[in-house]
Length: 95
Image (cartoon, rainbow, N blue to C red; front, side, top):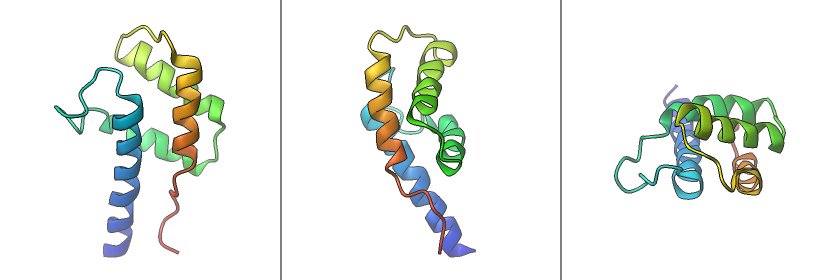
């Protein structure tokens, strides 16, 4: 169990880092490193279900525009680039 908890924390942190470093729509990476933690679980499940780049990009767009309430000026290409980074993460559990 301890190994799976450790692995989950690693996966969680890797998703968090992409959200903070690459997405960060409200610019809080240095002020509130847990600001986007509510998006980690849904993104994790999308990655586990091998969702497409477009589906993850749409999730990021919807999170920014509907949840956070910001206009997504450059969302299309940028969200797809971030989705590719998320899809490249190893989210498999202990093997």
